[in-house]
Length: 168
Image (cartoon, rainbow, N blue to C red; front, side):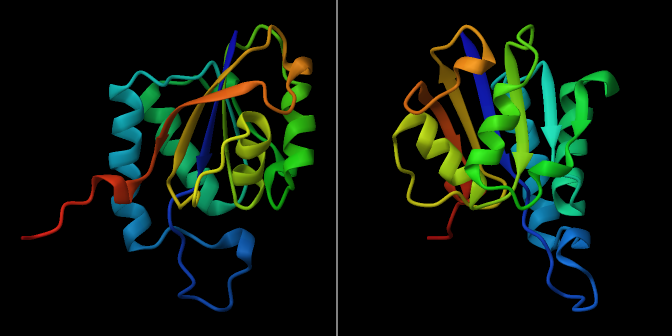
């Protein structure tokens, strides 16, 4: 049995039109949501053996915060260029080639690839995969090469707006 946690980067800024998409940082909401999301991962003990992340600034910022709080070693933290702007098929291929000693893998990246991958693996549609969302999936596989359509079950789908409290 394996576990996969898909994490969409926290909310990014469009404030500086001169920045490339790859270089966009987190905005104020992203900076506020990120520590809370990371703490929920810690409290629920969603701690991967390996983190694979996009190198885009917003994803890398998200991944680094997770790595630090969950105390993931540098050896188990991989910046993978293919994650940026990848379709679900590319992400699936990337995961299928992960080392089998990895029991729990966390992939930090972007939409629509993450949302489509989650649906492909679990055959369960989520209405939206918002920024700073976490989808924790139980996989009925013994090795990563077996990763295929319908092999997963969503154990947790969490995102910041689920925890918002509104004044009465």
